[in-house]
Length: 345
Image (cartoon, rainbow, N blue to C red; front, side):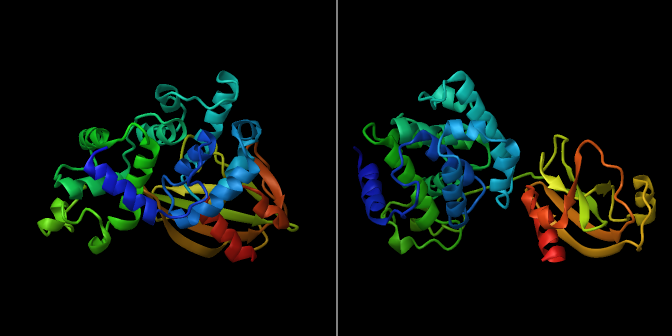
């Protein structure tokens, strides 16, 4: 074992956080934790992980669940394609691997929603596969430690860092090494204001020795932000309202929301939009809440209009009539959840 790896593992042994999935060897539970943490802070992800594995303790339980049930349990975590992909992958494991999580890298990597990093993390931790797992934390730490100025947002840089980690990876405990590398970036070599005095590599760290901790890593994205304008109608009639499921291959697929009219700009003709619903309203529509909801590549500008109607609009195949007391039984996106809480307590 090389000197770098010895120092890292000693540090990890002393400083690793106590987490519900730490020390876990069940590939299913490792998978769940990794998928949850892809776009979620650890402090938030813990409770979701615990509820998820309690409700769906193994691959077969997840595969047998209804997708709506999975999405409801996921509600609040965002990036719902993660949950849909997990559900589909669990069904694939059930149907093509006899319910047994695959143990080779190629088969793990082929599962829906699993990329290089996740496959390496599962493979190394659960099965001892010699695969370096490189996430954002590892990229940042290695860039600072080695003085790497290449853009970490591009695939070629990730491959280079993966090769470096492969040289340090100990054959006897690849999973522990990968967790230690991720932990170093997560709690010591953090993005802003890292506490270098607590780092065991401070004497060898290029960035620290050259006063460039704030300059590394180099990360440049060319992300185009798209603005979308969602105008929701909350129809109220006899203590009931209308929800509809998003069925298009778009954000929040298969989640529920109030009837929606998307406009091309912030200008929105409410009366004209309402004319398409074929209903007789008792009160004029009232704009009760508007907000901006920021996603990675989209900014959603949402408005919520409430109006009392004599009867609800004709129910389409993707819509359901819902008593107001049952609104929280449906899986919805965060912006709709907030609107429900604001309007109905």
